[in-house]
Length: 99
Image (cartoon, rainbow, N blue to C red; front, side, top):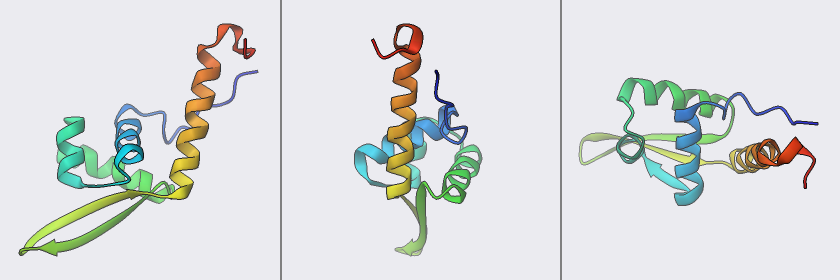
């Protein structure tokens, strides 16, 4: 039987953000924007959805009089990502039976 894919992570941009954060643990919004090639507005909306789900923490502060937004993956986010990857692997296996 196939496991349902997490609808929060089953979005190309949100999955890209989570993939980046899993590998670096924490990143500035501008870094994520650059790596995902997303617009600031779209990325902002998707980051907010990930934050609301508890998958990332968002910290806003000022650095040299400029706003700085940092995103960090949470333990819940790591677990959700790992579960998503396992579920996706199940879809990729022949018949989804683990063989």
